Length: 394
Image 1 (tube, rainbow, N blue to C red):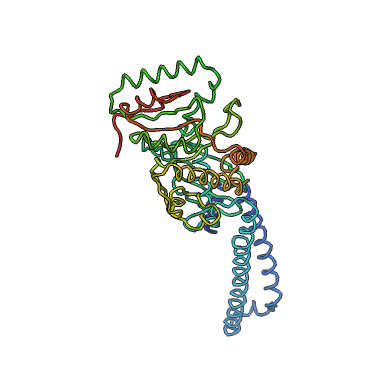
Image 2: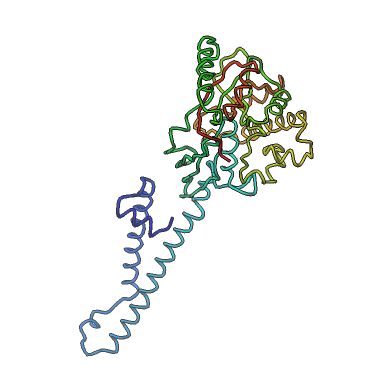
């Protein structure tokens, strides 16, 4: 933001109420200064009246003109310096002070490779949005606690991108633009019909019919839940058993089994091969060792073919994600536009530490010819076809 730009927008009536108030106060200030310096100039010059009437005294006229020009330049210079001082103090001193009191997505503190907001989005998305991954966030600072935030989500199954933009004004999202597809929940049927066995049976029958009708090489996205929750080691062995199925995301139990599945939290799995630029950030790993699952596996130097080691990696990864979002607290509630979400994260972490991590559902990608065996052999509660495309992308 520069002064010419804000004045131009003021003339076109394209400024916010705060910017308009600031500009009009500055104009009033400069008018007062101009009146003051004009009066002072006349007093200092003290031009005698007979000088004005003497036409022949050209030398005196020249001297007088030089004196006037000299003093006028001093007045103009003073005005410019005062204006510059006011401008610098407002936008380089006052504005950063205001910024410090509110969420600053441009801040770099949790990692080294990017703004904090990129790590915030990565953690929130992985915990809450199966099948989606966010891009690096771009932040345009507008001053006085106002930021323009833009990023996109990648649908890992389709390969489509969905753009998102927010205007964050002093700790709150003042306006937002995003694609409605981001509201789709692949576990919606399970959440709404968890205790309605007849509806779940009908959904399973429909999914089975779809699989039978589609071409064997048709590639599908499936939401699956089990009659009995899986331990992390059981999950790792299940992945090893079905090599042709891509296990993307696991839904983790956050309360007692008979509770309604109002909320869902989870984490990405080894089968999710998409690694963002943040995965190589070493600084965040100092406090949250398994924020990146792959980095934890590499640093631990474990045998990644052993289900026991994979299970331990999943455990540490889930803990790191929850510890991160809990520590970030109010900052993430701004992005999620939901108050007290931190309480859910704290309860989930406490439950996982006390009762162990149990997986009740999975998001998997597979060709129809491979998923059929899975449906027949495993003890499933819900099997739901989310999406399908003609063939698997490589």
